[in-house]
Image 1 (cartoon, rainbow, N blue to C red):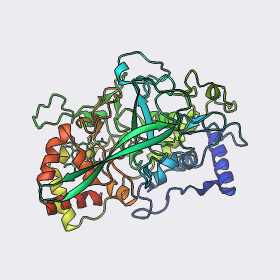
Image 2: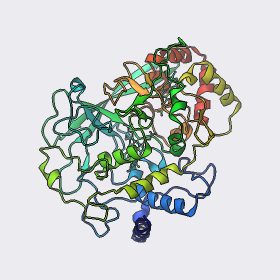
Image 3: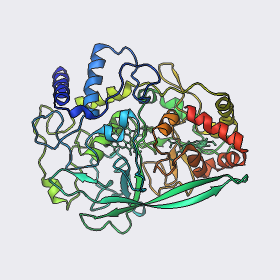
Image 4: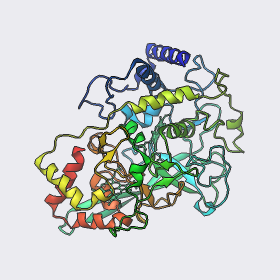
Length: 453
Ligand code: HEC
Ligand code: HEC
């Protein structure tokens, strides 16, 4: 353990010396406000925790490189990857731009694959708890397209988006332009997709406050479940459950039960870093160059690119961030906060959660799955989450995301919170209808509340 820390710290210093730390590092000093709203560190960790956070920060922020390299601390990237550091997709611990000015995808928008018609089939599986194995994968490309690769293999494809614009008009004449994307893949390097493979996309969530979410007891989440809609409000949240019964809480479909399982998945699937949950590179059987590509050097932990001690350091790092801090409410936003409840939003965007250590937190989510209707459905199943079911998106930090120019909803289709509301359907259709029926000033009050979060 001690050895790991020393090695990591050295690597960090080295990279800084050669200018490798160009990626903005989180703010560890300021307590509130400031330019990095998702990177406000919690106070007073003990020295050991502080060391772990520093180590985790280096593995999160500094670019990984292909093996073998002069440093064994951060080699093992690829052969396939989408980005060479977590921080590319989680800038300053937040999200990242996903779509360029021409409506084309940036690397932070992941293109994933599933074969819904083969759901019941048994699949190849090393890690049965992973959402990428909870659905049937494409035989040539697996569960996610790698738009990048080390020199040893060819990238799998070039992701593209087709955009359809849809004008929405309120009763009072106000208009909002909505966008809907159809994902496409060009330059497929390993043959065609299977006939029934569907492509779907996911954007990165912001990562503040995850240590708090991790210590919300299962019972607290389950207390809000209402699968049979006994209270008759049209809303029937249920938890996502893994095959071993664990409750899912991370990811757009709550398909990962713990921070460490989510990090292991990101490391393997997004960056090509093997770890104890994903001990083999994610090459498909006929991707020979990927299979034959050089492996990381043997280390005391074995051949894994990201041994457990380093994965645990990333976890400690992510656990160390405060919840995003809301702004002081203006009069209009204060009115909006009440309307947010009376419009029916809080039926899913649950106002308060209690952590095991007695803290009240306000992510504005129940961490349950809801049927969001056909327009939002991505057709994909992840563990118990059906094709149209999503985890209530936490809304804390929404204003900061808006100010950073990032987009909303799982596939980044919404440019604004208002557009996100207009896409709500299914169990949320009633809340959407109520929102639409409000007069412009009242709608504006709700939006100004959301912007203050
Ligand atoms: C190429 C972009 C990309 C990279 C690189 C990446 N992520 Fe992510 N991350 C995403 C996307 C997209 C999601 C949402 C996935 C989903 O729900 O399907 C996500 C989700 C997460 C979540 C869940 C957050 C929540 O609110 O539930 C965590 C935690 C996370 N990533 C951590 C990491 C870590 C740690 C790394 C580096 C090892 C990393 N990510 C690398 C794109 C990326
Ligand atoms: C039935 C449950 C439910 C209700 C009611 C509901 N939401 Fe949501 N909300 C969700 C889910 C689930 C998502 C994520 C959907 C997705 O990404 O496809 C979401 C996403 C959002 C987002 C985008 C967040 C992000 O991270 O991209 C906003 C903004 C939002 N809701 C606001 C509202 C407002 C305002 C209301 C009331 C008018 C409301 N919601 C009512 C379940 C609900």
